[in-house]
Image (cartoon, rainbow, N blue to C red; front, side, top):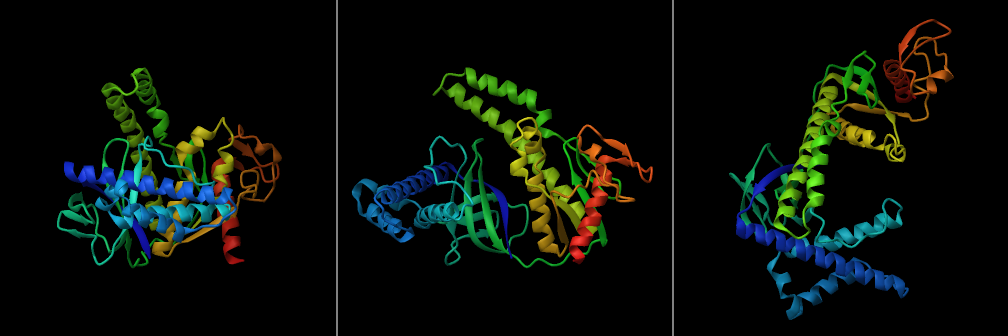
Length: 365
């Protein structure tokens, strides 16, 4: 199997300049390839990766584009492959139409492939094509490196995302079964009666974020003060992202270690985000990413993730007698008593029990 591991790298000034030059060249080639394919579409022609690759070869022969020879050639080819993948995703209705890349997008990246062991970790350094040995902060062991993505973040930091091969070994767990009902006030409630509160990192940092953004809006465009303030605002966003990722990783690992079977709802989070009243809170909770992390970790360690249909009335159904209470459809109802068996229910805990029961039925079907 393959996984991505992300390390921060510390290039010197010369290496930073070459990284930035490579980012610019990859963006240039991508945009020229996109313009070429757009023109072909308008004239009724069909072209693919091979034609854009020939365009890159011809550009390198042009004296006006001699600077392309100074950067990693594989990275330039990868930018055209990314463009081709973008068109494939568009025609298969998995993504929108490819757009031109802007130099003003502060999050820039390029990818290069390991050929002939030209990408490897040597001590405290990561060897990269054209860049040579770059100092790296390695936080975990890696396997065979397939490719690497170099990222330049809005805060001015550089990262290397290594795509590595590894052999995952099934991890022993406590063999439990659990149902999870995610929410906004509580991040999730489980069928064992546990409630994990929502840390709400975005909401807690909102005042500071608004203050930094307001300062940024008052700075004159193109000034050094604006550039410095932009980094300060980006640092707030970066901290929120890191806090959220750390929380999701720890919660998912705990569930994987304690349970063999985890039942979750098959939520259409993208559709739920269309509710403008709840979109910010849903995005802050990051349910979709949490489910993705659970899914790939279960694949690594041999756990079972069972998805319950989103339309299943888990909140309205009594987990004891099965009575369906239509009044519970109102989100304001947090506690209710079953008219049939007189059982008192907490809305979220009852839903998680029903998700577990339904998930076990789906698994055994």
